[in-house]
Image (cartoon, rainbow, N blue to C red; front, side, top):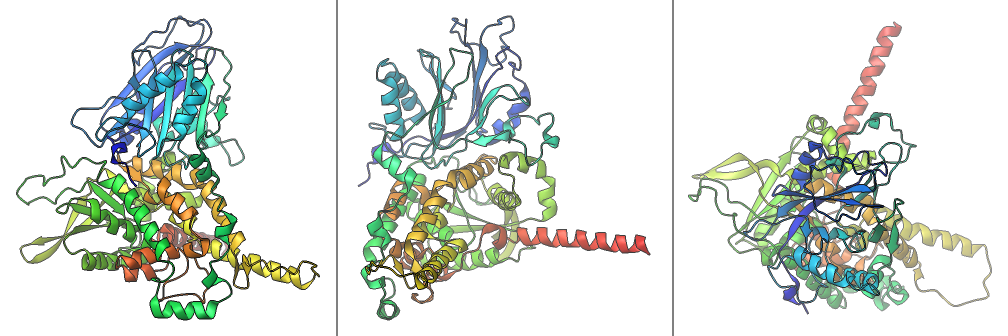
Length: 632
């Protein structure tokens, strides 16, 4: 059951908060933060400033340029925000300040958990009013506030200043789908800083001297709620545990042991099970799991597409068909099963005459595994949904293009800075930029035209692999763990003759369940903050339907053997067992070839990793040639 009253006006804002040093230094603002803040929220930037701390009884508002000079007590607190307005004709305002002096900067969307929130009502204003009212209860306000915030469904990061207690609240949703970074005062910068992205601040003196062993300037904030009282000079951060059973269950991602145990038809009956699959495919006893998953994912896509985006401004630029139609929705499209399934479900909820942009990136002259898959998946989407206008944007880049934007890219990635982060980040950043070639018709002649997507919302498949065993390491754990148990069993005598059916001759299901749990619990740190920053750097919003609370809960309460079947002997119609639930859903929707397609990570499918390797190999070869020449 879905309560449509919870879907609401959506704006994404970039957040920047900093508290000056205790001695009052580093208190003034400079214009250096504006480029980064504007990129994340191009529809407006706002600022609020207050003097806080010991001796600061003057709870007054000042404009963002006031430095507080002459007041030696206390510190300067600056709260800034930028807007990406997705609905409504009236311009939004950030941060939101109420009559009591409370301040809210909110980045994200509310898709549930806030009673009475109506369609097209500003979630930020409703939250600001509710937060203030809850915290006005001096005795129980903190507990009630944590309970209320714990129930908010959807991707969010927030900053709330409570004026009466001079307390700064901040946090991220249970999965960490919106970026929020923290810098705690040190010798490099004595300010306390919270920011959606490191790119909001100018280059710091000494950056180039930081080595891999030094403490990073920024760190990702772990999902949760935090508070910092600012009436004293000492900064003490307190973390508050989720006070909602659903949020806590999703955070832990601990599958019930009964659901780890393989279902009956998979418990040592590979022959009969495989025979049954060959005859009837996936439409057997797994129907309930597949149908339930499709329903949950479709609901997640609907919330992120049909009921939260304004179509205003998505018409033909000239009104005469001479300009490509503007799409309000795009899909980062590798042609793999995840992105194809999202595109197919988006088709249900995007107006029938609207275009959906499919952004596919390639770093090897238009020839890569992902480009081939994208072209074939486009054909399959057109075969199954012929009335939809699908527009494939072929984004062709080179390593030289990456070099040109390297400084901006590295700043946006920070604190994610591994080689893999850079490879993945470059591919995502260029794909999200959405600038490439599209096919157009000039009469009956097919032509290529350079085009840049104007979609403000992009659907991405993050979370699919972590939940449904899509990585190669999942297969390795599944089989290696059982091999170790078999070897140990051969060298020991056991008094207990009971057979543990969760650890079968074909694989170790508890080990697989545990590695999936670990992947989900660290997704906020390894992927989501980074990916949100990369997409938002182009003034677009990333939306992750596979990480909708309802979808995650559905997968978590599905028998693991219905989610993935990594046994090579259990296949139907050539469909691999990794991400079996997702592949079965795609197959059910008619995407037969997509369901069979092998997974490739974006850095390999786009060929950016290979191009880097080729360049490094050429450098090594050239250096060797120079050395030999000098030697002779």
